[in-house]
Length: 354
Length: 130
Image 1: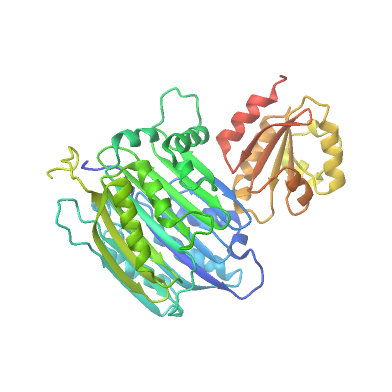
Image 2 (image 1 turned 45 degrees about the vertical axis):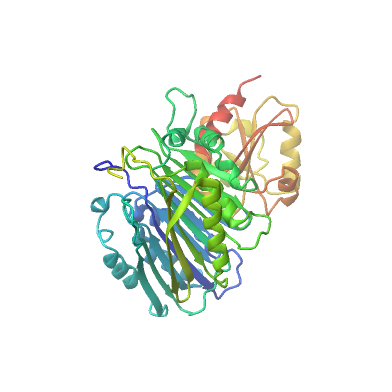
């Protein structure tokens, strides 16, 4: 592992609102200047964006922002100040007569935890800050660090979740899958470096990376808004009806990282089966270490799906599930956190002893 | 400064290639007039399909205005998909912003999304006489 480098692991915030007015656009009516100001506080900017009839998708200098009529999802990496966005978003929503009814904050374990600014040096501090920013009406709250106990030498990456909700029943019909990958296959990671004198710009280089890496085949129906950073790095938002997906890549050896996230339904409704989508996404990167955190919002949790994902990742990608943790969050649903590593563990020059 | 004035004047004010800026076409009649007028022209026409509620479109407006000022030999027009839904449908616009580049009445290129480098690149590529 490198001593220092760019932190790929993201902090993710989801805010869900209920509406007292009848405007179907809801949060999408927040004017862009106001959104830009919030992003400024968080220390990131918009580099690309697209909208369809269901939601707005922004690619940021440090990850992504999605604005639905009653939901905001913001995910930022590096050393960004994500939690500073909570109060401004709540305030902006209120001006549109939208009331916050649920909040979820989640993240993995940082590769460079000491490089993070306060309060991100400790999950306990993050929870204090989030709680202070939320109204009392969100009275069902829970914080949890899901820590795998593992028998191999890979660093144990925990999954941190904080949820707060006005109702005890979860309300989100879609399942959210957050995949974090480290120790990316070096050859695959090379696709995400800009080639010198390629005669391309960030948009066309991004488009080429999408195609060459196979990212465009994860969900062939999705419109992809991509962006290539200089000298390396890649981000994309996928837009498919009301479904979002997002991928962010830090390809540098020593701290390589890629994330894949999407919202989907458990029922195959033409958008792709969850285990197939996950397999295709992980196959792009062939990582040495993968974690999958799945939040079953409104669905009755189905153990069958969890097992199906494990079977397919084992069969198609030779990944063994080393740990599976399940926890319940009032108002948010069931969270399943699985950690995988290749069935055959090779000693990795960058990973230290095996 | 010129762009602010041209936006205030709205659409259909004389010869669009005389002032730099983005011309908003708000009605079917304005659209037909402008589009038909360009059919036999070698001038590059860039149609910006957007919506009043579209955040990504708003985020991109300064960049588009800047390009319109820079490329005075190109005609930039703006179409709101709610005001002119039949035009949006005709051009198969499903995501926004969508930029359709036309020359001699034919589509030569299109960009979907607020992609600054890509739009600038393609406008530069197509604007010359070809």
